Every structure is written in structure tokens, then in C-alpha cells.
Image 1 (cartoon, rainbow, N blue to C red):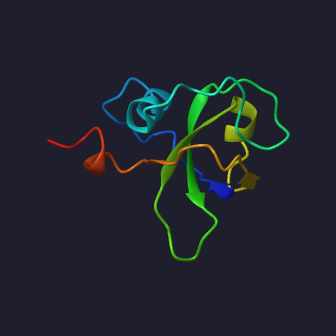
Image 2 (image 1 turned 120 degrees about the vertical axis):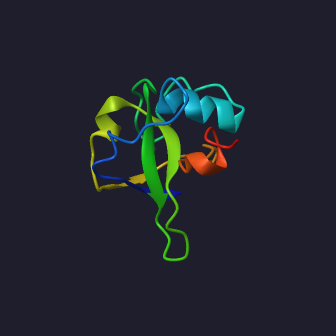
Length: 97
């Protein structure tokens, strides 16, 4: 699957301790040992904000990424199809009352 790494999202906050914790909570999965970007063997360390490479879905999602791939702002990344996309919309996740 191809996703686009979003720019200028570091100021976005949620009620979880981190965006990686947000991903764990709402995916129900353990963080993968390695970054899900194809041909990357670095450790998954952060929750990165991405969008699907799709004209019909402009939602923001969180996926685990290594710091190097998370810093590739605005670039398209090919990630494993098995990685869960978790909504970054806190009104639908950790901000729900």
C-alpha cells in the first residue's frame, strides 16, 4: 500500500502518551519490531501521520514508522499491506466522550 507522509503534524496532540501509543491502543496490535516501509529494517519508534495515496480518501491515519521514514515529509512510502491504519481523528478515537 502506498501512503503519503504528512508535513507539519508534530504539534498535533492526542490524549494518549504518544501517537505510537495511540496506534497500539486503537489497532489492538503490538508495535512491529521493524518499520513497515518496504525494504526498511529500522526499528519502529514513532507514530507517523499519513494519508492513503487515494483521491477518494483524504483522512489522516497513524502508522508505526522509524524516525528516518517519519522525517521524509511529503513523500510517498510503500508500506506492508498488513500494517493497520488507525484514524488520527481524535474525535473518533481517544477524544470520544
